[in-house]
Length: 265
Ligand code: ATP
Ligand code: MG
Image 1: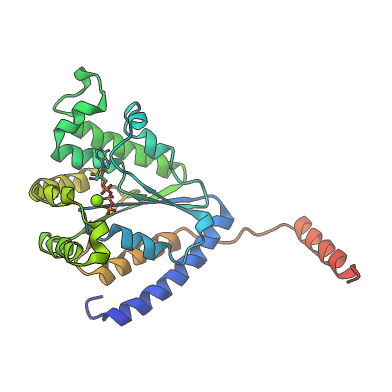
Image 2: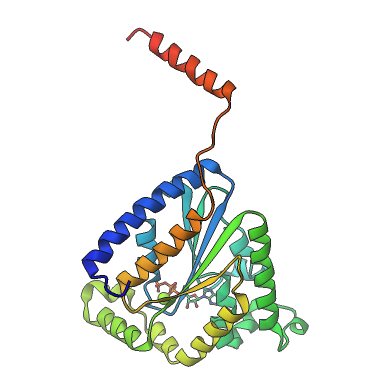
């Protein structure tokens, strides 16, 4: 995709979105598989833009986006997977997680003091806690996949330099002020720790049934195209088709047509 210009990328993306829409329509009609797309990234990597783009051609009835922020007090009263489990996509649909349970091995790894607020019994918080989380996440994803949920995970890999540029744009451009958060600039101070956590997370939780895709994120068009192509490949690999109907049903359709045609006016 290196030689693709911005206009070329836009065109390719439009084609890709049309292909995706057709596949999604079959996914929905067939009603067996569910798709779970997980997006993780540093701030300003473009998660929101990618999700908006991917969604733009898709029937909203068959797709839901969930954004996972710092947990609420109700969420803290449960295990960390609870809020994600409740939002697992139903068959026939695409679920998009904007952040996810992976925050539990990212922000919590970088700031282990967060563990203290998770109300876990003290004896369960050991030095092994993150290794246990990787194991549990792998098993949970295997469970989902064995039951018909296809998982694809995206790490949008923005560089530290590009993040700085995007933060500065948010400060300098009045229309982007709303996106700026001083907390994001503070988090940036932990860049190396985050990168180490991402690396470990990818090593520990990539599996054939739930692979991580590391997508370069300094160029927005490239990022969107790369994500769209993974989604199309995934859907294309599923042998999706509209359900076929049996002879009895075809006879019903004929009868219904005859009845409609016989109506006066
Ligand atoms: P935007 O791009 O609009 O800023 P965002 O996803 O960054 O979207 P924010 O409300 O800015 O949304 O940030 C959500 C914050 O919640 C992130 O800093 C993230 O690390 C944090 N968070 C998410 N899940 C957890 C968790 N399980 N424990 C602690 N913090 C979490
Ligand atoms: Mg943010």
